[in-house]
Image (cartoon, rainbow, N blue to C red; front, side, top):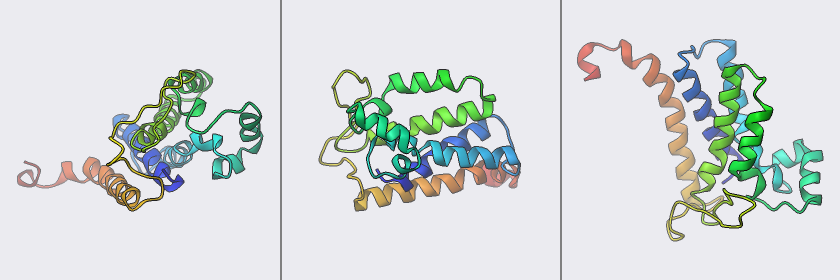
Amino acid sequence: MLQKTHSVAGMIAAEIVLIQGDISFFTWDAAGSLLLGCLAGTLADVDKPGSTMAKVLFPLSALLHVLKIKHRTLTHSLLFMALLAMICLPLPPLYFWVFILAYASHPLIDLLNDRGVQLFWPITLKIRLLPKWIAIDTGSASETVFRWVLLVVCLVLPFWNYVLPYLPYSFTK
């Protein structure tokens, strides 16, 4: 999937944390959470040479390259997510959960790709959720449709949480 798709998925993860924590979207914490979600959603691609995250975090990307870590392996694994969770424990709970869930959204939606993900790295088994013939190819029209669906969800979640409960009773049933 492309960076913009992962960014939207990360923002949805941040919105879910905000809604679950009953935190208003009209606060600085919410703005910081949405930005963090947008960035953390793309972070797993630091292992892909040429990606934006590989350019921004060049020392880490270079280290992964020297260690011969391939794309969609270590940084997309449950093991790495557990390591990140331990590193991020000192963060305030809001930002901890936004970061972890937004980061986890990345390998989750990559499981919809035809190439799959080594979720249990170092075990070389690649996992994907969809059969190859309907899997979403990176940069394809199906990814564009998927991204638009995610964008709609991203816009509907705050509306659903803040506006729908205040509509007249007959509208909510």
